[in-house]
Image 1 (cartoon, rainbow, N blue to C red):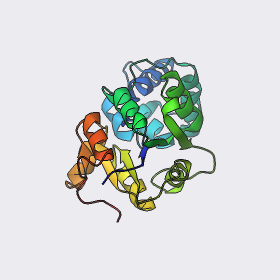
Image 2: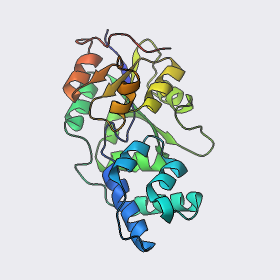
Image 3: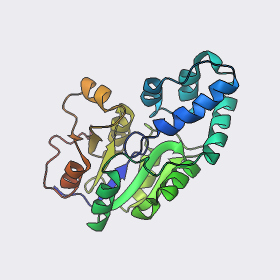
Image 4: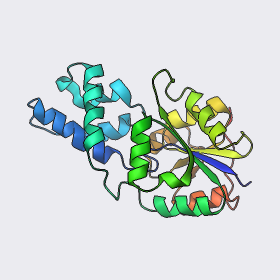
Length: 226
């Protein structure tokens, strides 16, 4: 079947956000006297979780106050330049192809709202999305369904004509909480862990494969609504 709408996770799905996170955390660690740099594998593993849990895991013994450290991280993130090549290979072309076909696109992320908007604007991708939903005060984080339901409303979609695309078990749980079929990107940060737990999860090896899925040229197989 073809889909009229697609809701995307952002970090680890469309953009290699661990690159920027690593640079910021390295600066924070250096300022606190750490001789080493942040473990990129830990950053990628915690990327879908985000928030204080990510800061605590990545900074380890150098975390001082998780809440304050998170705010410092976000303040630094506001100032850092977004690399022009932050999107994964093929993502820009794939998004443009999906958009040209008339499919409506949305973002559903645990990254703060203003950072989602800024990054997509700096990458000149914001124009492709009908709605961008990030985390905000008082809004439960994924895998709670709240953000995905907002994204679904933003594209004017329903569970029969919309697919959710992400890279982690959190994305799988989010999609299921809303009743959406889900597909994972092969290159995602958490995809390997997710499919290890559930080998049958649908996944797209490339953006071209994802385009085929959206257009109904390639079937997802079992749709994970449960």
